[in-house]
Amino acid sequence: MHQTTSPHIAVRPDWLALLQEEIIDPDLPIVDPHHHLWDHLGNRYFVHDILQDISSGHRITATVTVECGAMYNPFLAPELRPIGETQFLCGQASMADSGKYGECRVSHGIVGHADLCLGSEVESVLQAHIQAGGGRFKGVRYSSVWHVDPRARGSLANPPPYLLADPNFRRGFAQLAPLGLSFDAWMYHSQLPELLDLARAFPETKIALNHMGGFNGIGPYADKRDDVFAQWKPMMKDLVECKNISIKIGGMGMRLFGFDLATRDTPPSSLQLAKLWKPYVDTVIEMFGAKRCMFESNFPVDKGSFSYAVVWNAFKRLSHGAAPCERDDLFNQTATRFYNL
Image (cartoon, rainbow, N blue to C red; front, side, top):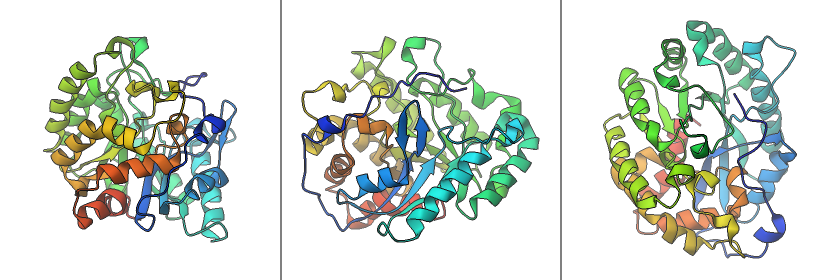
């Protein structure tokens, strides 16, 4: 399911160090609902690495770590091997929970992977995740990112087409809500109608749409940003009727989105990012409301384009005009409610 070469932008610490910003609203509590911990393709990002990024000044009180195929256990049956990632993340979380490195509870919530195409038999896998998670395991992500044109693919995942409509997948999906588990959806904007159909079929299952619905800016979509926005916006609006869907705002540092931030001589400032992202962020928050939106870092994937300090400054700039209760939802409460932290 995963590629052997990474589409992600390489992290260049020397380049990131060229820009330093004063932290905006440093006392604002933040739950980061989407980051990864991994050792992939020579890129290691563990608990100490994210804590170093967090130490740049924002008050991150907790995080949710999302599956990325890390540390699968080869000694288990194939369907149980993803349990190794949950065990790994719990070990990382216990280090943060010691309080030795600050107040942030890294991996306070865990979103793991389970092969939902196992159908009803996936229930035992989910139970094993829950047991291994010790209260941290909150849900499953099964990436459905697929496009007929290989040039439009910008993810490590490479699933079959129309995954969300597969009868076996849906039988597995049906096992989530009875166990109190949510689903993280990751797809390209061209696939959003597939999510609409799934959400309508399972209104009791909470769904977090990753990365703003994956508006695509590469391959056949390159240099067609206005056209993509015109396609993306009405499809996102259709999702509003599904009250079980919440939105993660972030991921826009990925190559997929086509902003080409990493090609600049110096890293983008939070002011530049806020200006660039404003049409998308304003649209999503206006549609779904703050209670269904949560800002995310998507680190270390987005770290190739900007620093942790800068991305949260950008989100704070983008939400500057919101009421205090709305900002609390965007930065803290929506994620806390969604993942039952």
